[in-house]
Length: 84
Image (cartoon, rainbow, N blue to C red; front, top):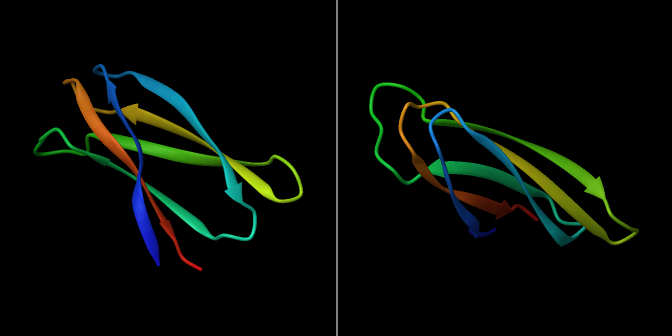
């Protein structure tokens, strides 16, 4: 398994944004997690969803939308794990 951080970001309270990352091999099985790096206790700070585009015969583009659920500015990392 291969793991890493693809990008980092910051969102204002209640804000959301969409990022994309392209050129991933189509035969890889990649799982995405978005983890806050700013401390927030008592409730979830962020949520995310991932959409996938088959860019061509050999490459995938991932579209990752991150939402800040907290009342504070939140920093985060978009992490991936290649499972195969």
